[in-house]
Length: 329
Length: 306
Image (cartoon, rainbow over all chains, first blue to last red; front, top):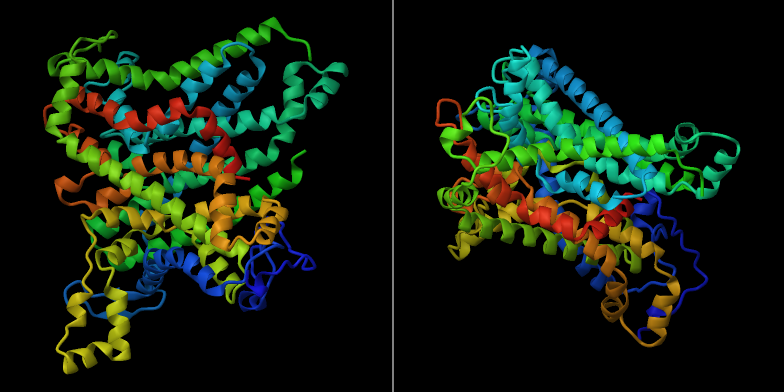
């Protein structure tokens, strides 16, 4: 055993699993103890070999692409010659002044908000009911969790069929009720359909977390409420719900992330962003502009905007996770 | 134990039944549609009971989309993502938590900053990076003059040797999806909760880092590895955007892309019965995983966000 691997009991390790948002610059190169086990090894070359695969993959498929997106956002590329001209913030000013982009941003905000609220409400109601019932829990859970296995793209295919204006059974019902349902022509119908498919696919996720959060409320607190004369609904609203608040905050963040970034498959299988751009969310638009219209400068600028949004949500997500850890009883 | 209300119980059962029905309804109609003929599927009103062509449609869809090959592709890509991501992540997490080495915090931040950006926001640059993975190396060797030097002295064309195009390859479908630190982060969080005494005891017994990793840390992580494998399996199998961009040849399609090709487009024959039958066998592997390993995966999912 090498002497350098000797026990080092005296070194206090800061092993608190926290994620500080900004690193101290000095700790980058120095011998910071953050997240290092008190009992550890000193074999720098072995350690380097162990992190190398991860760092290499990240270099090629994360850092270089991100760097390219950032640099492309500030240049204008001539589609034929391949020459680049630095244009500063031109791509961004063009982007923000484009009515299409603004429409897309407003639509994305509307879609993600509606999706987030609807998912939480439905999942909350189901989780509340699951918490109350005694019999059949496993069966209900099994069915409600099933969409977790189903890809967004398949969810899109299923709902596209159900509400297909010519063959879809639910579209027939709407027609019988007198609605002129047609998601291929009417923008509102298309957006509604995409939202329903997105919510259907995501209820299970919120449901899993809410069931776990409601279950984690100590029985003693609930019993104390019962002794004080609070009925089940009141106990739920004044005890369970506040204690699950950190989870709910976490889920709001995760729902927004899902609505923004993971609904591509749903949109691509149901509407392709149409009709008239009514379901062209920000992520779908990057794909449309970059791969269909080949407008690389604008697409890169859009990527940068999305990166900013993604970073914001990651920060919120870490805050949510931290809060959850701190408040848990 | 607190008191129970009959009325509330009934209400809750009704809510759950409605919820389960709402979740199951699209799947039921998909099954009905998948069991009809093309003619029957266009009936108004839509039949509420299944026909008897499900097997026939399934076989038809399987052959029409050449799903034998696509299934193999999907399995290779999914297993590659699961095994690749787990392996790369667990050894990286081991290194940053159990080793003192220069630039440890730099490595840590380089890894964890990647949690910030999902692959969806950098689709186009990632596409370019993977379509020309040798590009950065070429420019690097060009810049330091190695390319010209080799060409002049030995006649070796470094530029030509560094043309790696990963479009329509399995590695092109796998590697970009491994490039995220989520699993590394989870393993790190777990390693931080492992008692220090274990490592000290291992050292006293003369075990080196790799032996400690193999005989102590890996067995301890088995529950986490199992839960994460399930989540990554679903993630890999259900990938849509990346295979859509990255496969241009039909032999390299994944099952998900094959299904997309079966969706009837406007003006074509509305063969929804074929598409719906196909959707069942495309979603079958992840659905089976969820049904069989429900407990593992719900616990893993909730734990993984802590």
